[in-house]
Image 1: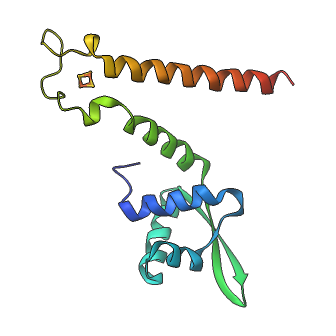
Image 2 (image 1 turned 30 degrees about the vertical axis):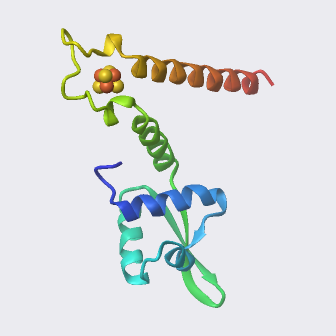
Length: 136
Ligand code: SF4
């Protein structure tokens, strides 16, 4: 998603994700994000073409506008992107010299090991939650 979407597009997607099922009235989104309506409408139309946003035409306070909601696929992509951003290698000062056979290697890296342990623990918690729900 990061290659496909710009900064303002990601802000729109985050706002829609936060709004959840109730969605956001398109006209109100511009004020929330400080975007003019013409640019905003163009950006949202692009997000809709990409399959990341759903638009439904509605009447709101006597004027035609759109109710915007995020697509499930976009939610999953955003979650993956957030998880990837937490990988320590992306912000590591040793990234250029880290590698097999060197003095700095992923096998000896405590930061990477701790990140992996947290990720495994988190996945384990999520799996347990799913198991509890499926046993009901
Ligand atoms: S494995 Fe460790 S040392 Fe190597 S780039 Fe990743 S965080 Fe940095």
